[in-house]
Amino acid sequence: IPYDPEKPTISSGIRLGTPAVTTRGFGVGEMRQIAGWIGEIVRDTDNEALQARVHGEVRALCSRFPVPA
Image (tube, rainbow, N blue to C red; front, top):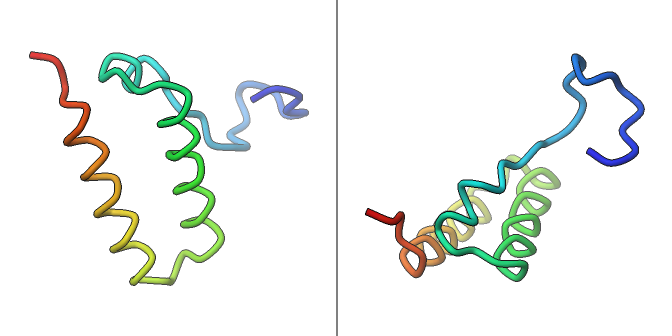
C-alpha cells in the first residue's frame, strides 16, 4: 500500500491481487467498481440488503468476464 507507515510484516490494509482480475480481462473501470463495492461494504458491514445487492452486481460482473479455460 503506497505510503503505508507499517512494516511489511504488519497487516494494516486491504491488498488486492491484480493478476487474478487482469487474467479475467478486468480493466481500470472494473477495478474502480470493485474498490467501490469494498468501500460500501466496509462502511456498512451489517447491512444485509447492501450485501445482497453487491453480491448480485459482483456475479453480473464476473459473468461478463469468465475465467479463461
